[in-house]
Length: 110
Length: 115
Image (tube, rainbow over the protein chains, first blue to last red):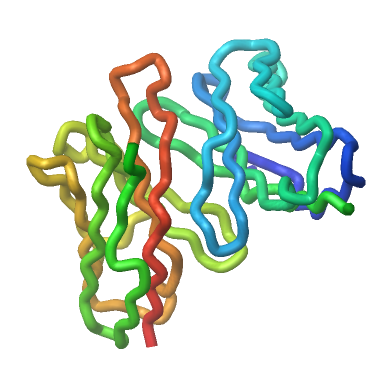
């Protein structure tokens, strides 16, 4: 079992719809959770960080964390074609080590 | 504010050669991370440094070494290069003391091609 698991996709949604990206992790002691967006050939860009159970909203993005279920998700409202990218879930398992999931490819159709 | 700077952006080496990648973190950031990302793969953590000391180690081959200098910049040294070392190498930095510890900001990457 991988430490951080994501559905590889691709996830295809129409423009204006809500895109829902999911991630599960195996280390119950994990404390910090991050979502990165990565365009092909580019570096990962931090979108959201979340540390406590519940929801955290930032513009069109909402991160949701459920530590009991070891589950973190990212919702993108009013999806735009420019949101088409690979979304990486990252989990800090303690210390300075952050484990990345394999990423979910999102396609937003115009 | 300037982001993480990496140099060179592209590097072509032959098998068994050595390569040195450089990373200049965001100003005041005290932690540097190195990642390797192969085509279609997620970033694999190699090594990190906090306040110039190695803070964690991931799947870094013994042929690779890294250090962080007094000005906080870091270098990844790669020897006896193999074809399989061809990848994007990212450096990231964070300000670990804040509550937002471990929020890593990535540089543009160095694309290493080994022929």
